[in-house]
Image (tube, rainbow, N blue to C red; front, side, top):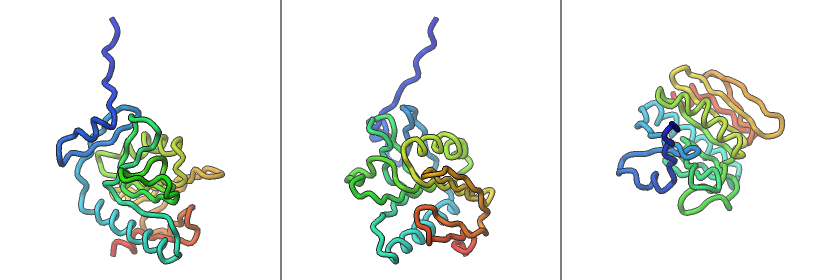
Length: 181
């Protein structure tokens, strides 16, 4: 007897979620999102501010979008994510609905319920979609895992007290500990 088929969800299902509920869609599988913690939101706010100020201070054209912000990674209706921070340098990817295609840089801030998604599922999805740089900020362990998918792929783990350089913006250095003071 064949196993029952798992329902494949689409972006229509995301838009049909009840008010106040958020979810992400990866390869047709729906993942519900829990409300973020206070420290999650503080890190999100500060990182967005620091990155945005750096870009505008250098006269750059990239744009920073904190969650909730829709990212349609593939040209299909089975993939929809809301990264904590999306940095998009190609304005042709921006639409009224969000970002169509891979952002240049994505930052995810881990919560207890999102660890598997951020470290495994999204890592692979972002890499194959064409994201150039991916940071996983883990407030529970006070670590930042930095992945560079451009050129020679690289992965380095930092502590919150380390000086962390962006691969995309060579002159941007961030210290999470200093940022949270």
